Image (cartoon, rainbow, N blue to C red; front, side):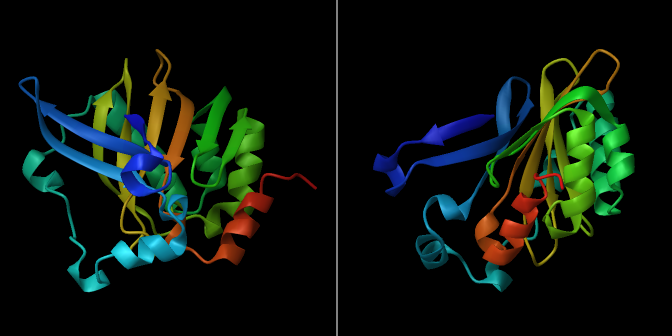
Length: 197
């Protein structure tokens, strides 16, 4: 679920992604992911807990995996390809007219060829690239869903939302992560991956 907190709440507009688990029509787990640069890096650092106090998990083991098998398969395959740094394998899971959006980088790409070029050039700079790990999947094949991931010490948690067609092919990817944990130069290089030479 994507939502916006108005500036009255935190001093700046905050656009977040919430992954929500349901059981018996009740919410049993809800985790928000947002980009610290939305508040300014300085403001975010002032609120950040020490790294050794940050939780290692958010009850995903207790709640378990309830996402549809089709969505879990798509999420697992896509996350594994990104974690392996294999842009070609990741792109092969995408519809030819896929829309790929990294909301934290303010980047939107259309089509599998453009998305492959972006991933092939910039995947090593992205927190959801090499050495990232899938944590938890929510959602259904029909309505879409998301998977939470981490990249170890770089970014403890991020989220990638997926929409699938009737054949289980990924038609839309939307990523949200905390870029305040990434050096600015690395972010500029990653954004530069959207420009074809």
